[in-house]
Amino acid sequence: MDVAQSISDGFARDCVAMELDDRLVDLNAVIDHDATIRLITSKEPEGLDILRHSAAHVMAQAVLRLYDKAKLTIGPVIDDGFYYDIDMQPVSEDDFPKIEAEIKKIVKEKLPIQRSEVSKDRALEFYKDEPYKIEMISDLDDGTISFYEQGEFTDLCRGPHIPHTGFIKAFKLMKVSGAYWRADQSRAQLQRIYGTAYFNKKELKAYLHFLEEAKKRNHRKIGQALDLFSFNDEAPGMPFFHPKGMELWNELLKYWRLEHRTAGYVETKTPIMLNRALWERSGHWDNYRENMYTSAIDDMEYAIKPMNCPGGMLIYRRKPH
Image 1: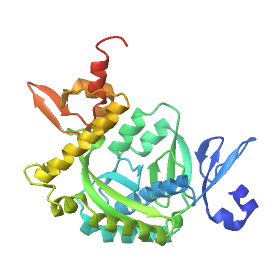
Image 2: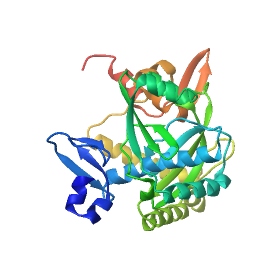
Image 3: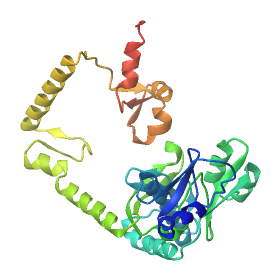
Image 4: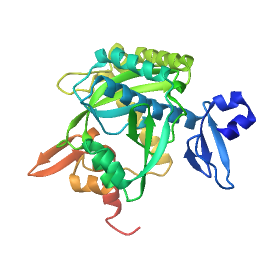
């Protein structure tokens, strides 16, 4: 922050973090050696990610103020915003105005966001009543663990974060869904609350307008209007192709095959369902389990393939190349 202010106060007000020797850190991090630094402002992609990461913390803080029995897990940044998985009573979009009102209070308080580092033992003691945080800390290597604090709220986090909560000028909660802890159906089902945040209201308004325009061009509406396909409750999210839709489907496949043959590719076909052992090897089971369709056959777990690569690799490994 001292470096940013040495350039100008206006520039400093627009800075959210810095890159110190290729490592993102908070603006109040001490530079105690000759180093290369890059100041990150609200105009850069990293700046927006940092803002949204902090917004996830603010949302979690608001939820804890309103639902004192809630237990926090993780709250990452995603492409268009952020989410936080929370073990709490079921909430719906009807609850969003109440949560957003509490977020506004926290933003208005301009709470400084401060980093601290403690030992693993101290972290476990601090979170003794938080089972999810205990589990995450237990998985970490021994050494120092970083916390971030804003007002009465403290969260386990790597950082960095914006200097204070007042940087969040525009935010909106978008939707809520269920999610299993660590994508394991045998574990607790959590409330996954999605939101987005921007540095100004104009950008948020533009994003919400984009979403409204996208709804008007929704493939479901277009498909029905052109009599290409329809959807039924018997197979949620899976299209039933009509004659015109099949014509279009086959023409696209014909074009796809032509382009691939021209480029020197050949086709293979692998099973739609493969057993759990393969998905564990590929990493899908640990990372994408909650978005995979599974079934038990003869006491063995299978999953419909979310992608072709692992099956293709089984073909490839049948002989040396």
